[in-house]
Image 1 (spheres, rainbow, N blue to C red):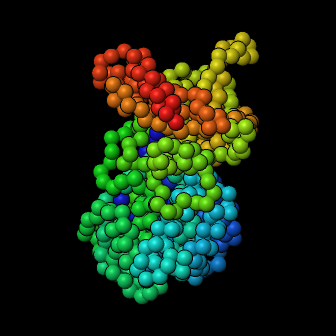
Image 2 (tube, rainbow, N blue to C red):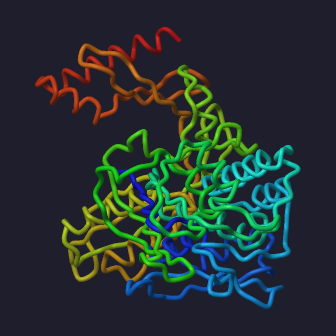
Image 3 (cartoon, helix red, strand yellow):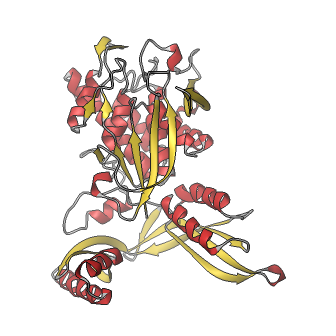
Length: 462
């Protein structure tokens, strides 16, 4: 199962609205504060969240309180605008921001996404002012609160284990907005540039205020695989992030979270071409070996601490275990789905005999360090356990790649494992084989055999 997110932006999008929706979904504020402090700006801000009401609807508002300023970033204290940012004196250029993010030791996906968002912002500002991106002197989007918005949003999406994201069409807003360069028309030039760059569908909802901020637009333009109506998926929860003021519509960003069996291509979180971080992740390294030469997809998994040994990859993995003797097997099956949705690598159970001769179930979860907190939270919320054991282990894995082979039944994906460049393990994708068996009304083993034969021909040619 894959986790899919949908951004429903009826009244636009801003960075703090994204944070509010994520916190409403359960991303711990303490986790965001701790991770953001790794950027080296922990003494510049503090985070707090409040429940507010917008047109009678309850939502979460996240405030970034700046330590060195007497006022908070609160839209009630800004010039008239819908979802606008307060402008602070802390301005940084793109290379400074990149250095902060790259040295912070954040989860790999959050690092890559954050860098990509800021680089898109730099490109948009550079296009507006006619200068190179690395010479853009950010004011609004280089301020501490905008860094917190962007990096915090990427951290939250990673914490939730989001694999893919789609965004609704965005309202244009209207009127003017005051910024470092004076009064500008809405959408602001940089926002309009990003909208055009990704061919974003836009419309007017009749509200003549700034509804889409540069940070909010950059997050959507960088991470959304596509724009439009919600896809078909199983909706499981909704996060409501409040904008700064009441409008004629409820000023709330709605972040829908759900699951799909297979992630559609239109939902894949993308990295803007040319914006990959210098540090190569496991996924990127694997994808470079693909014969197809296709671009990497960072939404598949988080990379983990690793080293090469005899052609294998040794990576750190966390093992979580707990015994259960009073939980229905149906609930355990549900817990499996929830754990995989937040990024567990594997989940399995074993029958055990517990004290007083009670039959029980030993539940084991394997996950990366970055996903351990999310997995523990699911175990505490969804099971009757009162305690979870944790152990850090190192596992050896083959270098892996995905290939597509042609069979008489159609194209089927195969997972290929290599040792020192030699193919040692090939497995056809079960779901692909099952789909072909159903559509052609033939036995599943027959399709699997055809896939294996095609796979043998594939690696024999390489």
